[in-house]
Image (cartoon, rainbow, N blue to C red; front, side):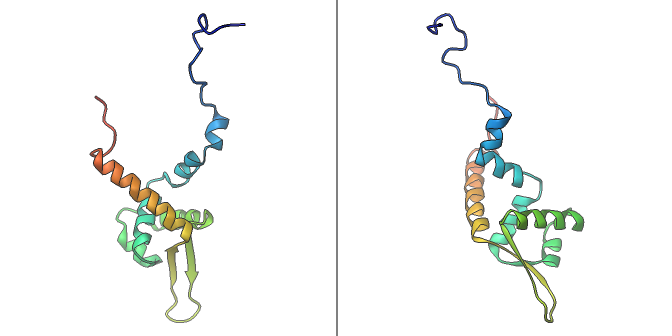
Length: 124
């Protein structure tokens, strides 16, 4: 039995496994919203509900195909609620759910931290 004096791994943290990463809730959320557009849409929807066409016009360089895919993903995750009006004017509206608003609060805090770090951690 090793006492640790002869063991180069003694006191070192065990490597993080794929299973550890899969069980980490923060990693799971960052994986879900870490694409190019999810945070942009969450921040827009934090201001107010938007119609689909309004979102399409509000975000430059975002194709309608990708907008639809990201909105469907955010809806499936429970961050966004989609409401389709069945009477004129026909319109599909997107709004943050309570979970989406709490996610926005966390994202906003991350933004404050990033601003304080001048765009994020820098190598020195």
